[in-house]
Image (cartoon, rainbow, N blue to C red; front, side, top):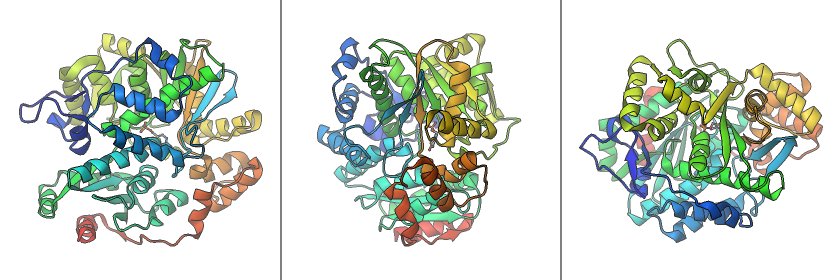
Length: 491
Ligand SMILES: *Cc1c(COP(=O)(O)O)cnc(C)c1O
């Protein structure tokens, strides 16, 4: 299987590339991104045949349908990382919360957020490729809180790969910051910057695009790569859990094989939703994919009105910060798949230049046959957290809560819904403690203890241990100093 570019080919680059070059060198013509040339069809028996198989077998067979240029042994070793999840026999539990509503918990990995689902195996794959080619890589990451810990965790102590991770000092939760600054490995550098997430992201993009920086790295025989969510090496692992969750519903006798379901996805950069879209195109019986957003509701407006509009909106900080995004990168792959490269290039160029595009009414109809959308304010989110804890005895984080609104307003047929839980309660505990007690402004540690007591559950070891660990990463600097800091780290 080869990969082609969402904005077409400029005649300078290869028209098609292999999976491994798409993940190692993701830069493509006209600023597009790589997408699979075609999606494999799963075939009528695939679902039935995997009713009794475990998560890793399902993942292995799905990846092999993509026929990618990675050795089976490497794929198996990458998938073995799911053995470190809470329950190795089922890394993604699916829990019934209400009549008709099931929650697929994607947060049972080492950093307690769904980024582990993709980054754990992806990190192993990328490091193996680097080693096999005898190449050195620098992975740059900018994080608002969840990607950073997951990227550091997956690359720590791996040969041939070093990671520099930028985070806004004061802009993450205590738990998220501790997850990063307590990481102690010679190949990891964590850099707090004076500024917000946008500053971190802008600094990263500048370095990725800087000729001088790239030339300095070349002298050191280091290639630059990014672990951001458009990398297809992450997306491929995000198709698996949608199929797994469906099969779990069949196993729990909630549905019969072939019944349609809603997938209900808390969305930011649209990687999770894209995985669901690909699963649907490959043959998973899905009625619609519900896109849940917070107040930063560009996706809601795109799907309901056909307009992608960043002109009059500025980013607002919400209690679901991992979804505080205006430019949702993976939407481009949907445009490409539905409307082709030429139209995608036109729309994306318009978005870059005018911060706006509008679909035709036919295009909007096509989009609405697949997606429905709604957004959830912070106040509504708190309400869903409180109500669900009190009435259904289920504890959830503010990102997951946005799905409950989309479910109430968008799941209009009497079909089962799979909502995705993208973070454990431990990662956003002050918000959850406020929902449960009415008290705001608690520290993470107070909030964790309060919730644990109220819910009668233990704080997971990975989180509890953070508060006693040494701070290994002390660097907090101005934006202007980032480049020099990274070069010093590389030696
Ligand atoms: C990254 C993240 C999201 C958004 O996922 P996308 O794939 O970018 O749409 C939602 N919730 C949490 C907790 C996240 O970390």
